Length: 160
Ligand code: THU
Image (cartoon, rainbow, N blue to C red):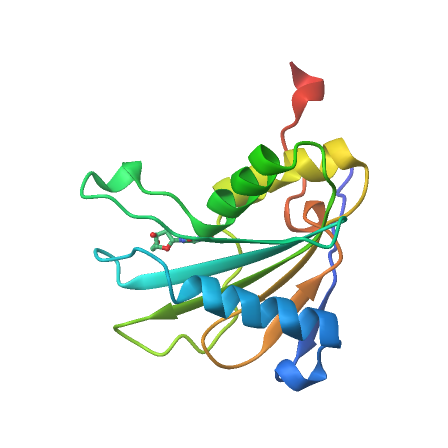
């Protein structure tokens, strides 16, 4: 028996001006997407902006429903939109931004577990890491070098 340590690393930025021009632009796009979210129930809006290898930026936001489980997260709306429009196109990075009508979201909001699982499949298939950049409405920004770094012991098609 042995204990194994799994470590992950991320870069913490104090504000958007510390990001590269490209990353800052993508975060702005995520804000733009977030402002169009349909979140009448949770009042918690999330926007996601994906940069594809062909230079296209695909936006998505959360889409809620009166039958709550029928709603969908911003990240999955965005990745499925990208995959349906540009099948097999590599995703270079994804920026995520969140805000609430009830409170000021002042800490970085990472993708939920289901979105990590969904995104991991695309990262594995494209054999190239997807950078993840996430923040709240204000405050610090987190950047990780890959999706799988946020999902140790993930489930993938090799088990099937
Ligand atoms: N949400 C996202 O869009 N992405 C996440 O990663 C976490 C949660 C949405 C789902 C729901 O519409 C609202 O945020 C509150 O959970």
